[in-house]
Image (cartoon, rainbow, N blue to C red; front, side, top):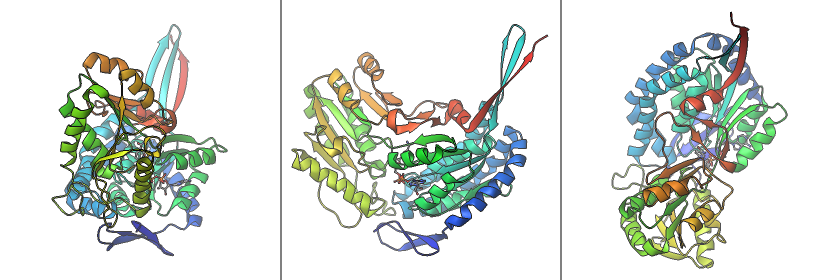
Length: 459
Ligand code: NAD
């Protein structure tokens, strides 16, 4: 069963546990996408003429409204995406709570910089591009649009969102809330599957901020090439977690379990591979089993469950096929692995893995903790870097040694004895085939801007 089904005119979302309809939105006919873009283009000059701080201040009340409506919107999010209600509500709330700080941070980041040499003063302006298309996935169906829409808008672009066809309802609600406070045409939404996304990419847009799979990112990059359209691509990954002698094993096991199973493993920076040093392997695995017992599957409204169903049957089939491939090639099931009805996949620990198995090389996006034994940190780093991806990585070990090895990891974001989440102001950045460009933090906000340098003679 898929979350959504297309009929002639609407995208309908279904509760992933019960199959009941949650609601529907009208599909935007592909031949109307250019008209939507034209409206965004028409609204762009007046929006760009405001100061960044004026634009930021206009969005702030939307943050409060998101917080006020968090219960209602979080329920819609959870019903159509599957994550537990508390996480759905939390995702909505966090977007609301971030709004004041983030809008101010963008407004500050896009103020001009001044450089001087003897006889010359150069002003670096951070201008809007014009029209920004943002195309987003289903796994964090309000946070992902929020991450690109807020900087794009405050930087002075008008925006068109094409959310995932799996989670159109929450995206629609998000845009409605922001549009309570924005001028007409500044933020619009189009609904549909990849055809609508392709029409948007092919249309008269200046910047495409895409979050989603590597293969869709590759198509978008090729489609953007003739127009040399600006791109921010946030793509998939196969994040490693390294656990070495000297690590706090309680902390490492708690992290590895949570980061393998939260959101049913459907997180771009999920722990998809665990490399454990042989000397501490048994102790770590025992602790990981204990941590895994804390995760139970159930309907998003079942308060005793902390993992929901997978977002669609195709995703479940993909995860189980990787597990079967690994078992056929010698993997041991250490915990879980029992079949379940519907879209549920049980949190599972696999051991004795290697890089001949799909589950260690191809993005899984499911609740499977995958363990490979290594003899030392150098072997762990070599294996961790043996991937085309490079979004995040985490290493647990003795502080100095873990920090030294962290600099040898090829991921864009690395956590040492902690998760990879950075301090306020850090960009969200993938390396290698996990992305092009980055967003968030002052550096990320400027990716939504055209830099212009104006130099004058200094008296
Ligand atoms: P997806 O690529 O299938 O779809 C994402 C969006 O792109 C959807 O709205 C879809 O309709 C649209 N789309 C698909 N093909 C397109 C095309 N050729 N042109 C234009 N639009 C197109 O991804 P998904 O299954 O929704 O999401 C899961 C993927 O997203 C995973 O690979 C995950 O790692 C990645 N992801 C990455 C990040 C990050 O920050 N790097 C964050 C979240 C998710």
